Amino acid sequence: MLIVADPTEDLEWAQKEGEQLFRVLSEKVSSSRLEIEFIGGRQVTKLKLLSLIKGKNIIHYSGHLYFSDDPLENGWQISESKILKAREIKNSGFNTDLVFSNSCQSNSNASRTLNSDLMNNFAGAFLMSGIKSFIGTNWEIIDNQNTIDFTIQFYSYLFSDKSIGESLFLAKEYARRTFDTNDLTWTNYSLHGIPNQQVILDPTKGKTIQKIINPTLISKFYPSNIAVSYYSFIQKQKEETESPFELIRSLIDSFEEFSKIVGGIIFSDHQHHSLGKYIPNNPTTQLKLKNGGN
Image (cartoon, rainbow, N blue to C red; front, side, top):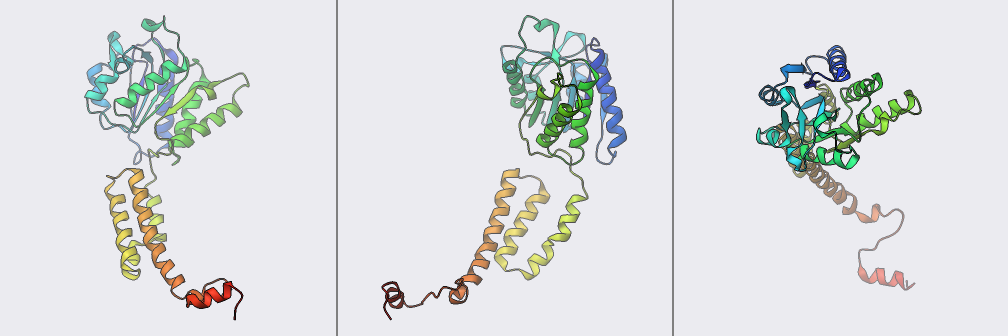
C-alpha cells in the first residue's frame, strides 16, 4: 500500500490524514499482511510517484485534483506544479486493485463548479487507466478530523477481511451514527468498480476451508465426474489467473456434475422416491389410471 499526502504542501489536513492513516494501519495490521509506504510534500515528484505506484494493490491519495475536458488528462497535482495524469498512469502499465482519492480541487481549476458529474468523470478516467476500483468524493471534502476518522474506519473494515463495498458501507454507517446530524461526510463518498472485491485476505481463512472440503478425499472417493470438475476448480483457484466470474463458473460446473450423480441416484428407482405417489412403468397403465380405469 502507498499513501500519498499533500504533494503541494498547502493542505495541512491532507498531511495530517496521511500521517494518522500510516500510524494507525502500521499499528493495527500485521506487517506480514501489509507493506505500507508513506510519501508526502516535495518528495512526490512525477517520476518517483510513477515508480512507487507499480506493484501496489492499494493507493491512498490526499491532495489536489486536476480536471481537464479530456478525461485521460485528469489527474493529481503534485510538487513543482506538475500533474500526474491518468494517461501517464495508463501508459506506465499500472494495475492496482483500489485507489482511494480523498481530494479537493486545485487552484488552477477554481473556475470549475465541482459536482458529482465532474467527479464521476474523474473516476472514469482512472478506471480507464487500469484501476479496478476507485473511491472518490462527490464534492469538496471538509478539512476536519471527521474526514480523517471516516477514512481510518474504511481501512479498518477493509483489513478486517471485508469487501471494498461492505467496508465503504460500514464506514458510512459509522459516520452517520457518530458525527453530528448536520455532518454529511457519509454521503460524500462513491465507489466506482467492484463492490464485492476483497483486496486483502487473511491467509488462515483458506486453511479452514480446506479442512471442511478436502480435495484429496473428493478425488479418492467421489465419482470421477465430480472429482475432475472439482479438481479443475481448485487448480484455477490456486493459480489466481482466473477472474471471480470464471471461478464461479467453474464451481457451478462442479455442482452440476454433483447434481447429475445425485439426480441419477434419486430417479434410478422412481417408484420408491415418488413422494407417496405411484408412478407406473407401463404407459398403458398410466393412461388407465388417468381415465379412472382399473
